[in-house]
Length: 497
Ligand code: NAI
Ligand code: MG
Image (cartoon, rainbow, N blue to C red):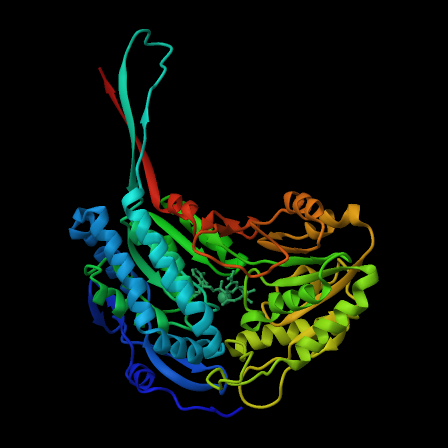
């Protein structure tokens, strides 16, 4: 799959120079002098060289973040802080085309998708969060103290930044995940050490340049690319980090939670999923087919909330499977910079190996592909959009997160048992329900154990809506007002009168 259009001048400039770490407002090489490479997943060719941070660089970055917290950042008033956060959103949109191209080249996703979704969502997150900077108030409280009869108090709460935050993010929405993390941290007055995924560090590094341009003071945001087992683990373990925020695999999420017990730093986790998408016979079936296809194939299926378990009421099963299989077969897979591309390659050789391994396990366990079912021959890490049937609740493809364009479709007859089936998972991130019966939809929404339930829609993300998981899909929520609690401590102040 050859590159259809050449990269723009800005992208060429950014990728042709070795990229450095940002620590204390300075761009520097890793102390070890090491570098690593990122690849264009559509060709497997080297895209850029990046400084490889490890534990020593994390130490420097944490120290810089601590100094910045105690320094000018902490002294800015909320309005000033909010305006800086807002300006980050403005600068993202001023550089939208460049960021979309960088994201496409580093991750593989179509540039058009990045331009329509990732980039504006990232900007909007900063704009939304900026407004909260001036509204983070505590309250006045009237205490009743049984053992101090007649005593009077004036009491109030203060909401303070939690402090120095370590943020570890994945490769599926590199810029957007950076925004989800940085937006609330900056708004609440925290300082940050961000470790982007080793597969896709480029857009976070470009964002860091834009943040300095927006007026974020030196040391407030430090960016240290590197590997998870070295830089990531050092950040999660660091005794001078007050909070760690992580998005990625459930497996690593558990490691982070364990590591964080060292200094009992605060932890928020946004982890994997195996989300059910449920189609009732009384749904607008064509809309459900389109929604189910988008629910799994968007972003190559590399979405934590992908609707990867499709439950269809028996009498519509064949029609829905045929519809989604046709949709899968019609998806134009190719290089992300080709404007006609609808789906790109998977992010890495490792992810390609994982997804193709799941396809062979599915085959062994008796799952049948009605569309796709294998890798695409040639350069790059391409996999066919795949629909599998003849799957049951105990099959690997129904239980484990594939994180690729693979959906398992299953018929259901017993409506009373449906919530149990939907909840039969270690995960609880998202769900979809397609029906014209509003009571049925809302009743099912109450029964589903997931952080997001879509009704007659799927993959609706917005800065206003809290997002996160029940069960092993994580701890805490991203976005909305709710995420702010992850980044603040509440202090009660009591005055005896
Ligand atoms: P991962 O969880 O290993 O990587 C995510 C981030 O964690 C990266 O920045 C990585 O460098 C870092 N990391 C890895 N090991 C670490 C450690 N010991 N300590 C601290 N940080 C560490 O995910 P990976 O290996 O890239 O993908 C494996 C699977 O994880 C995927 O197939 C998918 O199922 C799931 N995943 C889920 C994501 C989500 O959005 N919930 C995002 C990415 C992956
Ligand atoms: Mg990993």
